[in-house]
Amino acid sequence: MTDQNRSGSIAGIEAVGANVTIKNCYYLQGTCEGGINLEEVEDQAEAKSEAEMKEESFVDTLNKENESPIWKKDKNGRLPSIKIIFERFF
Image: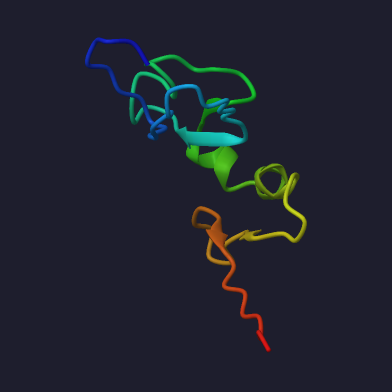
């Protein structure tokens, strides 16, 4: 971010001296001017249409770097949602 008051669709704070990488982030097209610093940044913060977000391939994209898939396609044609995963800790 710059010293100007700017916003995008991806929010967060970068600590001074931190090495932060934003990737695999998507936002609904038309909801803001851009993903990071009001710009679309390929492979970091990209706009997708609602139709694109409802495709099975989009769910695969969201899950591509997860050890276990956490995103699932909605059976009623809505946007993907996060699976609730219960694990037992002993």
